[in-house]
Image (cartoon, rainbow over the protein chains, first blue to last red):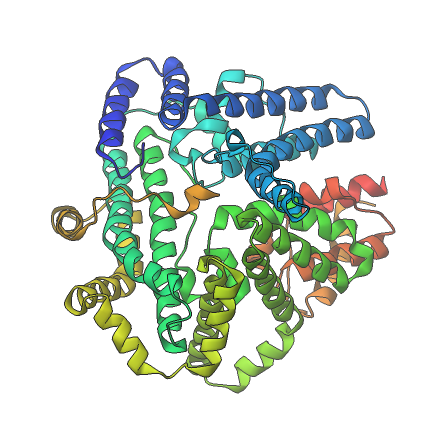
Length: 478
Length: 80
C-alpha cells in the first residue's frame, strides 16, 4: 500500500475518522493496529520481524536499566545490537553472500542452486532497526529511561507514516508524543494536507516523470557523452531529491493530521556551499543518527589521536553508509567520496575562510555552490549506475566528451523532443519555486490566496501532469 | 571548585579553542550559538578541558552534553 495509491487514501481517511471519534486513551491501540495492517498489506509474515525487533529492544532496555554495573549494561547493549544488526545484515546481504558462495562453488564445477533461498528484503527494515538501535543507545547512555509500555513502544517502532523510509525519529522526540492527547484541530489538519499535496506533486509530477530519461541514460552509459551523463546525473539528483523529500513530507503531513510532529528530513540541499552543509540539509534524520550513534562514539573513542581521529571516524562512518546502501562497490565509492570531501573541508576550513574574505562574497558563494553541486552530481552517478563498469564509463565520458552537445541533443530527441522539453519545463519551475512553496507549506496560518489558489493549483497540476503508475519510492529498497 | 570558578576557566578554554576573545558563554549556550563549533573543535574543546581541569570525559558523558550548562555541571561533578 503506497502513499501514492487510492487504497492508501481510503485507509487513511477511515483511520482519521475513527481516530478522532474514539477516546484518546485508546488511540495508541488504533494506531498500532493501523500500522501493523499497513505493513502486513505488503507482506504479512514480515510483521514477525518487526515484533521480534520490538521485543528484543524493549526487554533489553529494561534489563539494561536494572543492571548494576557498566560492564553488564554494555553486555546487554551489545547483545541487543548484535541481534538487531544481525537481522538487518541477514536480510540485506544474504542474497549477496549466497550468490558469492554459489559462484565460488561453480568455479570448482559444483552446481548448487536452491530457489527457495531468494530472500526478499523486508520493507523499511533499515529505518525501524536504526530507530530501535538509537533507542537502545539512548537508554545505555542514560539520555532517557526505558519505555515501560510495550504497546506504545511497539507503536514507536512501527508508526506507519515513517515506518518504511523515515524520517528516523529520536525516541526522546517521538515517544512522549504518544502520551499526549491530540485534539481535532481543523487548522492543523489543513496544514498536514498541505505537506501531502506538496509531497504528491513532487513525487508524481517531478520524480516519476523523470524516471524514463534517467533510466535510459544510465542503462546505456557506453552510448552517451560526458555532457549527456552530466545532464542525466542532474536529472537523477532532482528525481532522487523530489522522490525522497516527497516521501518525508507526506509522512510529516500524515503524522501532523493525527497530531504528531516529525522532524524535517530535507532542507533544500542543492543550495549547499560545501559537502558538510549538504549533509546537514540532505536526509537530515540519517545524518543526525550517524553523527550521534556512530561518528561521535568512534571519534571520542580515539580522541587521543587528535585530528586523525576525525579522518578515521569519517572514513568508517561513510564506508558503512556506502555498504548500507548496497553490496555494489559503487556504493562504497559513493560513501568514500563523501568522506574524502568532508575530511578535505575539515582540514581546509581556515584556508577557505581566508579565501572567502579575499573574494567578493557573492562570487565566492556561487562558486562554492556550483563546485559542491558538481561533486554531488558526480558522486550520485555512483548511486544510480548499475555496475562498476557503468560508473567507469561515466567517469571516462566526463573527461573525454563533456562538451559533446550533439550527443546530448540526440538523447533529448530520442526521449521525445516536445514531451521531454515539457518535463524539463516542469522541473525548472519546480527548482525555481521549491523554496518559496515549501515556505508556504510550513506556514502555520496560510493566507486566503494560498489556500484558495496555490494549493488547489498544485492539486490540479498533479492530476493533469502527474504520473499515476504507482511507482515505488526509491528509498524503499534500503 | 564552584560553578563561577569553573565558568572563568571554561571561558578561557573556549576563547583559546575557537580563537575568538569576544566569545561569551552561559548555561544555555549550544553549538548553534558559536561559530565554527563543529566536531573538530568539539574534540579539541573536550581534550583541552580534560587537560585544563585534569579530568577524564568518557563516551557516556559526551552523549549527555547538550549545552554549556551540562558541560559545567559535568566538570563540577568530576572535580568534586
